[in-house]
Length: 233
Length: 257
Ligand code: HEM
Ligand code: SF4
Ligand code: FES
Image (cartoon, rainbow over all chains, first blue to last red; front, side, top):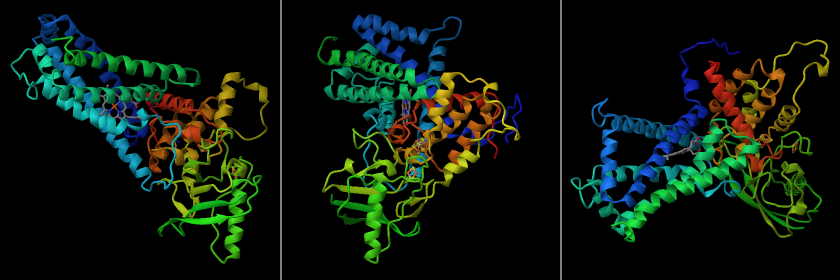
């Protein structure tokens, strides 16, 4: 029998590291990242508004909160939260991945899956693709070191220079499709993990997950593809 | 009908196993899958060979003893559109065609160590139940059944969850070898009942703790479990378990170690 004391503060290790707790870490960090992605996607669409607006928007991000707080404070808080979220997400993912590997060391000779979707099957390797992409993306458009226009160009010029190259755009397309699949299953899985699904809601949750994943992916894909075909120059 | 069986043969956990091919002749379409294995075993005994070990008891789909992977599906569920989800003992040979090749394998999971051939040790599921799948009630005269009212929708959902027979197909089918569907059905069927409330928080925390200790994988909500379950236990139970667990942790419940 467990003795529970209200207000008990210290948690034994086991509770903190239970498989469900890790899933909750994954869900919460995933949601933080998704919220950021929504804002990021909308921001990217400003490429259509021209160089001045887009560069101004980029400037504004650096100035949020001024003059109450020094320049870039809010930006760095956002970056820190994202970094912690990504780290927590990857920690939980790897830990559960290893647990699953340990749970079935010997595979079946014959195996047939009927329920799993492409999205659910590719969460782990798709996640690895996303992780690598995030690194490349930061080197490309944030730091500019992997960008043809380089670090000193304006954000708008960097985007145009990058996406004019079909290979760069291809990398983005692959990564964003991976993101779409990741979110298709992730949104549904997070709803389950946080205990918010049931038989009646199940269809709605799944439909929402699909629509959300498609809209977000499309929203991200439009600017790079528009640059590639010359709609944005 | 005549069938070609490829059966996993392994004398003990310590030895290596392999798929062995057998021809089984004159199988009646009315036989259950287990009766077909009986026919194979009689033939093996007559030939002076070791019969194939497999678990079974009631042979009417209620005890949860039987269960093998049939052509890569737990209990063969999901292979036949016409056939409802059942336990292996309720799968009949009329679902197959003359001349079929059928692969038969044991449940594979670290938490289910192999005993012999198709028989595995599923006592890990019992230990998960021991960790919290019970209620404490005073003994003595049974109270009047109507003295505690239960909402119809709760009693229906609790009953649906309680139909789990503990066969382990969910674990066998899960890509992560997670027992989440099993554990959730146990957590939910008691958690929806007034009698299950006193231990509700401890139950979920301790059962999940035990599940992890037994070496099962974590759930990633893929749904192979529910598609393989002879009782069609719904994924909503997993969501309910998660909800209970979050509530219990917030309320300060911790697993006994
Ligand atoms: C860095 C690489 C990443 C890895 C290795 C990774 C891996 C995973 C894994 C293994 C899961 C659990 C899958 C499941 O439940 O079936 C997951 C869930 C999820 N991921 Fe990621 N992921 C990564 C990046 C991202 C990013 C960038 C986002 C944000 C858009 C994201 C959002 C989510 C969400 C919302 C979930 C659902 C949480 C849950 O399952 O409860 N992930 N991720
Ligand atoms: S949930 Fe279904 S598949 Fe899993 S043990 Fe119970 S009856 Fe078997
Ligand atoms: S032998 Fe009892 S369920 Fe199959």
